[in-house]
Image (cartoon, rainbow, N blue to C red):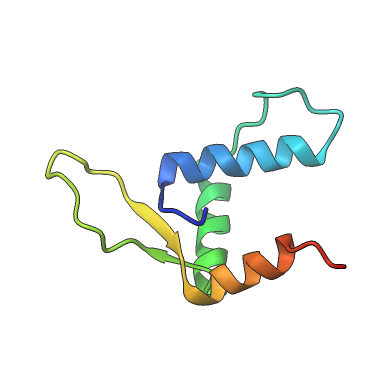
Length: 84
């Protein structure tokens, strides 16, 4: 999520990560209910990892978009960096 992501994309990516973490789960079978998704989103926001995007969009685009905060970018980089 180094680029912005809509809420629907954020939910899809979260489901993909859950699928990837459990070899017993078939691809495209994980569904995250609304309450759980909101809990995860609030937690990421509370930890200072994401924020709502302020980028201007077309009036017809009514989705909410999220982006990493500078702290979230640093944290993601540390987590994904290959240690020598």
